[in-house]
Image: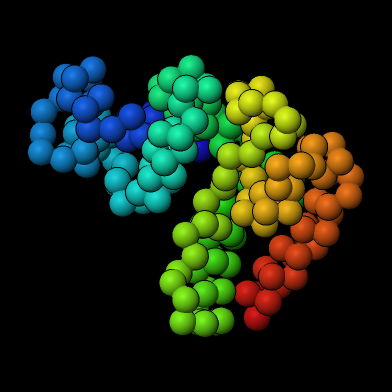
Amino acid sequence: MTPEEKEFLFYAAMGYDYLRNVKKLSGNTQEDLLKQLFPTLAYADFQQKIANIQRLAHKHKDSFGGKEAFCRWYIDQYDKQNGCCAYCGVSEAACRHFFETQNARHDTGSKRPTRGHSLELERKLPNQCYSPENCVLICYVCNNAKSDFIAEEDFRETVADGIKKFWKIQQAKAAK
């Protein structure tokens, strides 16, 4: 992720009021305001990522020292992990593709899954609080398997390799 993309995501995740009040921009939509700061970046290209950061920030901002601190942490962590799950290494793009196409292949009449398209926030040590030191970004499959009772080290030693294999098989199937 380029420094410009990181800043774009930060301002976008902070939202319309932040852009109007802190950055002193004027415009009718958040997209208009962002275009003033980042004329070469398209809001639509980042929309899903922005929504994910905002959703997680709303839920976890207090344990990270506020919304601004959470947004900075998330973007830096995402960049540090190269947009991949901290445990199995699958990319967020591969997760999104899998869950978008998986639903079409196995339509059961149920509504579209709401999770799986983006990396999720997970505590490395489940008995400790959400904090920058205790959190990483992981895929939906790892998050469900790890749950709230397996510590990071135990998960890496016993489960993560099986999930890596699962993703390799799914990516091979998708390539056919």
